[in-house]
Amino acid sequence: MSVGMSLLAILDEAPTYGLRLKQEFEARTGGVWPLNVGQVYTTLDRLERDGLIRPVAGEAEGQKAYEVTATGRGTLEEWFQRPAKMDPPPRDELVLKLVMAIRHPDVDASDVIQAERKGAVELLRDFTMLKRDPPAETDLGWLLLVESLIFQLEARVRWLDACEARLDRSSAHLRTEAMPTPARSEETIPTEVLP
Amino acid sequence: MTATVELRQVGKSFGSGHVKVDALADVSMVVEPGELVAVMGPSGSGKTTLLSLAGGLDEPTSGALLVEGVELATLGRGRLARLRRQRIGYVFQQFNLIEGLTAAENVSLPLELDGTGRHSARKQALQALELVGMSELADRFPDELSGGEQQRVAIARAVVGERVLLLADEPTGALDSVTGESVLRLLRAHCDRGGSGLLVTHDARFAAWADRIVFLRDGQIIDQTSVGEGPESLLSPTGTG
Image 1: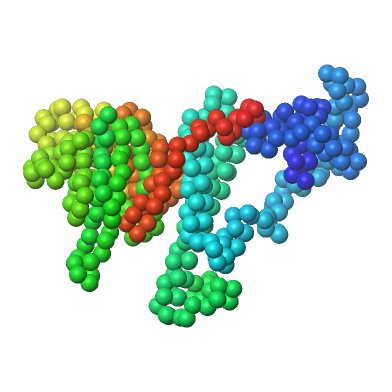
Image 2: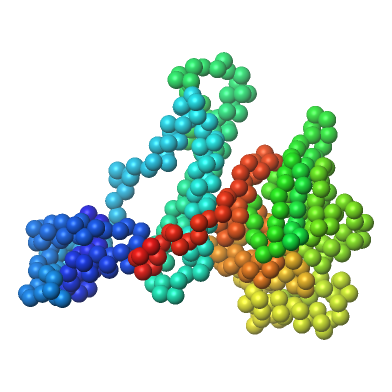
């Protein structure tokens, strides 16, 4: 959906054809989300079928060009005004991994946390380096995208720190209570460490 | 090349007997000239202790600490104090500027205390303030400056003269995100000029400005980042990356 809306937004600036749309989309997103040409044409077919775009009379550089219809402009306006969907929350591999790790008998969740934290910090450093010395032709959209990745990685590290603290409190609680060690599959998290 | 600071199996304990606490245990690390190293870890992991030892503000219980190849334990009190004053600069979360002195006077003070003439000290202070983009506010008093500007003055004070090692303990803690980033740019610039920096922070976004990030936990180094592949492999603003 978001690719379709993005192509619609680019088309709304000026009518153009598929290959140029693909190049423009990739340039604005720093090549993070590459599109294949087939995907672009499938999306354009769908937008045309839904009455959001229509072919422009004639051809541009030998290619079939499109423009946005009045319906398309209305849909685009609504997209810009409506908050991006977070419900249901997007599935996150890291969250799933940790949720599984805390129960798995052969996995030390602390090791998983540290490996993930190190990976995130390394990536964060590399993105920061990129932002520090941006290439000459950098545009604002690209900078926003890099910063979005930086903030997401920061959030990831903060969440991992919080997980570690919660895990520490959980094991400290188990030690002080001197509870008989339950079978791992029956182990429960003490209520004190839950929000 | 001699490391700017080197910790060799350094340990630090507080108290004794039943109340003995090992704040650091067997920590080995180096910071090379031109390098900015960040230390990350939860509260109580020993970050600040590590920084105090690296700056000669405290003595290790075991192991050795070298600054520019000189083992600190071999120095007498006077020489150690001189080394601290002349080669090491400190930046803290609180800017610790002296209220009754202007920005330039705050920066020149450590030089004057060290015997530099007033005229020369002011000249060097203005140079340091220029490095942090504060030349035009050199004659303002701390209460006439924003938090970010005060931290810039504190950084100028930390790098003025011939200081090579900059030790920073949560320097962005009292600043907003954008101002915090400008502080990191200054620490980075100090290292890019050939100086060295050791930064303690719990904030990954600021630690990410370092060349290397060391993870500390329960007084021990448990991990550190490896050298990156370089940003070329990540993103390209032209969409070809």
